[in-house]
Length: 343
Figure 1 (cartoon, one colour):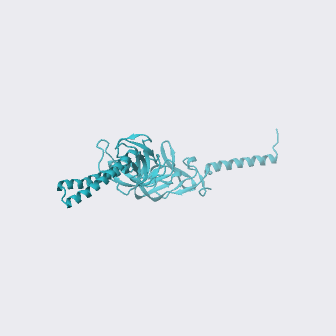
Figure 2 (spheres, one colour):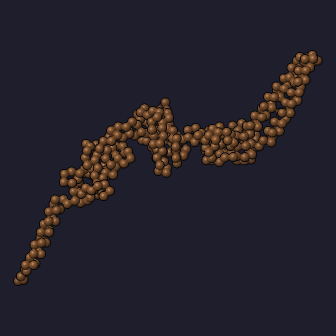
Figure 3 (cartoon, helix red, strand yellow):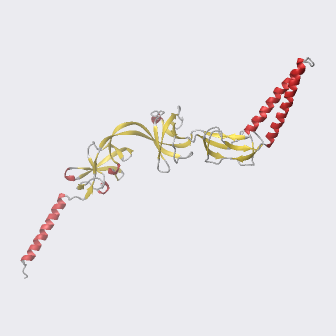
């Protein structure tokens, strides 16, 4: 039988003590993770109504010429060009019009001479009064014809009726056009609007001046203001339209479809940092720090999100310390070590 030396007995004793110490720490719940915490607190949040709708031009003007049967000499703009009021957009061939103007002006000169002769003959009583008046009236007719020819020359140049941006072009040089045919389109003042559809229960809460916010396709938010609310509802869908001006539409374009929100008056709400909310099994939870730095998992019902905070509708009374950094790695009953945020 082998004998146990004193040194061996000491080693065995130390090992036993270490094992007991480890079991004691595990039983006491040694810290499993370093986390940061924040207080669930009441904040003033704007009430938000989500909505979707089309981005459209505030006013899109269809442009054409007032002359028929004329050939287009040049088109001076392309889609996307920003134009100023009065700027030439399109020019018709003016050769025929110029000839008509010269003829009208020549006829006016002859008519004016005849009118002067008629006045002289009437003063001298050399012709009947009716004949003199006919000569005088001829000048009036010729003057009207000359003015009409000058007006037709002006119509040969299509000018921008407003400041804006060209949104469509359906004409090419050399094309023979007719009066009233759409040749160009202009978005007036480059203004866009959001036309959001809302059910009647929400529509009645919106008024002119309500702020709106849309996510832009480039990730930048776009803000606007409700200009007007439709006075009538669609009888089938029971929805109405909200028209919101977008003074700085950014990357938004007419024809896009956008989901945004309308921002109503602010209200007090119980909130937690968005990073503190953990989604598991289709439900939202937070981990509340308790005595001895032990966390308890609490199921909550969330509401609106504003920036980096989330509204808590149910599950917290307010004032609790909730885990923010590290919340996704915890389980109910874990003991943690609290460190400053970002530590």
